[in-house]
Amino acid sequence: MKKLLLIMVVLFTLIIAGCNQEATGNDQDESSLKKVTMVLDWTPNTNHTGLYVAQAEGYFEEEGLDVEITLPGESGADQVVASGKAEFGIGAQEALTEARIQDIPIVSLAAIIQHNTSGFASPADKEITSPADYSGKTYGGWGAPVEKAVIDSLMKQEDASADDVNIINMGNTDFFTAVERDVDFAWIYYGWTGVEAELRDIDLNMQYLTDYSEKLDYYTPVITTNESLIDSEPETIQAFMKAVTKGYEYAIDNPDKAADILIEAVPDLDPELVKASQEWISPKYQDDASQWGLQDENVWQKYGDWMYENGLLEKELDASSAYTNEFLPEK
Image 1 (cartoon, helix red, strand yellow):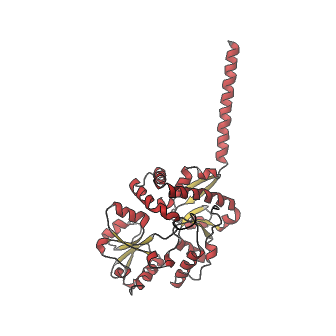
Image 2 (tube, rainbow, N blue to C red):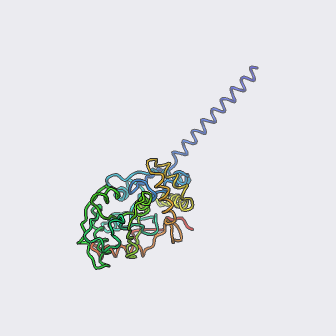
Image 3 (cartoon, rainbow, N blue to C red):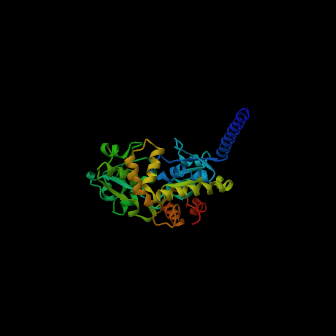
């Protein structure tokens, strides 16, 4: 009996020791993951789904990364990434183009959406059906010079001028509140605000930028990093982009499941809007490109030329340095 008791004690001790070693091993595995930060451009939405999929499905961990997804704060994602306070961020070609001209060392790694899905929207009862109808109307924006330039470029095609538009800064006021109050039209991304209008049974008139100029078919949004990280830790970028690519490919193939992942990660989002938006946007992530994320130098050059021609840049853009495809997985 005593021998049996002794054997049981020894076995119990070995089991406890094994569990402790296993727990210690797990801790070491977790601590061995490289911590990096991804800073968003705005509050979480379906532009970002692939990131949340990569996190939830363990794609980042598979590549040895512990990724924290954060909000931009007052300084904005581009500033945070350029300063090296975050390894990765969400940006847009228009802002990154301006940054490159100012020698800010930020680079685009991938196009999240292959074609520009933005445009000027207005409730149908405003009767704005073309850029010429902007004359005498009030535009609500965020105070960037590029807004008037884009409006003017569209209106000029119809012998009209942005000088006849009342342009106001609506700040953080949402589109639906603004157009009920003092705004006639605004610049929106249809994949979120336009889809929300559908859910609210609000008919919109929409002038997509791509319908008026191929130079305005630029990449927005994009995934960014800084030149220092490219030089010092290319393997980190390679690992990150491999995981992110898998995340967006999952969202392309499984929009409903991807929407569920985003909803679970960000419970404050409206589930109905997320589901509808994801259904709309998933086919547009890759669209006609040979793979997700791919960028074309002509797209960068044409938009840079447009900005320069419209007095938005002090000098011409070196398009080849503004982006890179080298960290996308080989297909």
